[in-house]
Length: 338
Image 1 (cartoon, rainbow, N blue to C red):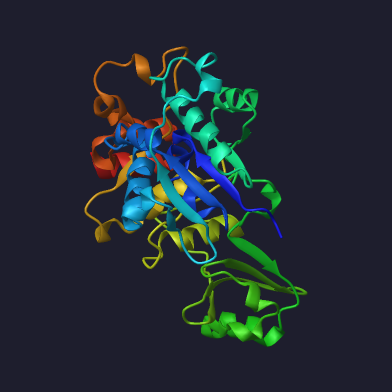
Image 2 (image 1 turned 135 degrees about the vertical axis):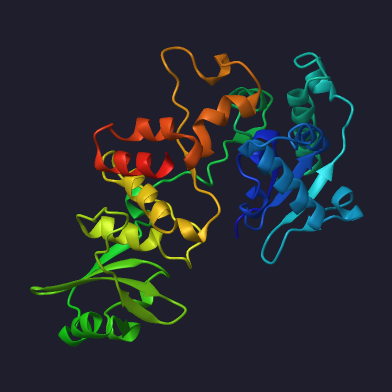
């Protein structure tokens, strides 16, 4: 049986992933009070680290009890316990090396060092994304690790959103074309299908494009539809168009190489179904020019980001950056906006 460990989380781990407390299996988690103090300074703001700070504090509040400061609370079924530890006087072994007790990193190190002596029969591990803090921990004999739970180890196994299904029965493909739908049980390996996953169905010379709807347990045909004058040129673009105009999908993400039509199809789909919405927003990556990144621009964060995120109807200049002035899409957008 694996030895139960005690993981001490640094602030940057929480700011990186607010759900981190659910990723340590049956092991226990310690949150130094210093970490909570630092999180308090990150709660206000619109950046992703501010979101993670708020989410983690809410999750901790859901577990809230005096036991958080006295033995810890069970995180969930088959999970360990989580506890908050208060400050302690600087350990004598650390005073000469880390005399600055007012430094947050040193206070976290001190708590971790004291806990190692308290849990002498367990492995105490400091988890931090700060390389320097990990090096300091190892220098005083503490185990230290990076937080790597969310690292992608095998990119080839990532979900692609579509799959090829061979040896589909002829009758099923005929039903797809004739009726538009077919019961999912008619397809090989259908148990592995994921809701809203797109399928390229093949049997010899016969083929069809379809999407799996788990709620209805059907496979629905995907048509090669034109949206706002734009016609898909391959299976992937047909899938993208189908997903973008599907009102039952609250969020659609498109990935692919440059030039594969992601921006074009997203804009065309937005304009095709614009009657269902009050506003269309267009955003683009913040790309520095020369050595002048966004930090050199005048104003607060809102004024700096305004050129990158505006209503489509107010920002023809952003669209001009996406398409050439002579492109059909740009001309259509210009006529509609002006």
